[in-house]
Image (cartoon, rainbow, N blue to C red; front, side, top):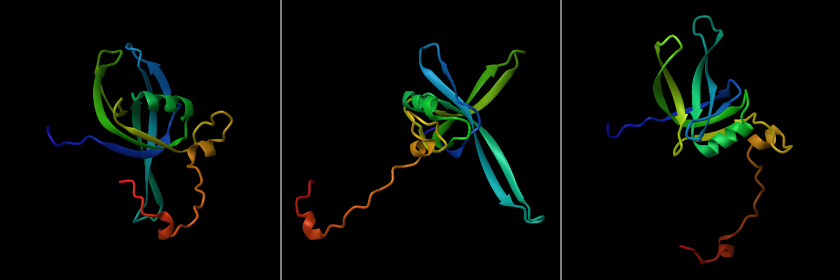
Length: 151
């Protein structure tokens, strides 16, 4: 179907330690579950309600596989972009089972660690997960910039 889009954007927490495996062709794959939650106040009772959805995440992109193996752990908060893929397989009883997954394939997908990553080389997880602090830049006047525009 021309003009269709299969894109999923999720922000949630890793629900289990990521599992890495190597496929028959030698390519590494990482999979894990991601929890997303909706919260709202019930109009009639006034109490806080919450509903959690679990998503199966599969990463084929070699660069993201490396990051996932080294830095993700249970509880890590992630921003993910991928696509939905449903696959059919047979369980041990020979019954057809369908599984829908969010896939970050080799040429598409994005993963941003928001917080809670594993420490690397002695760095704290807060340092790894947070962006570098910005240093204030001195103000410049238009006269100091000059007319040499590079385009």
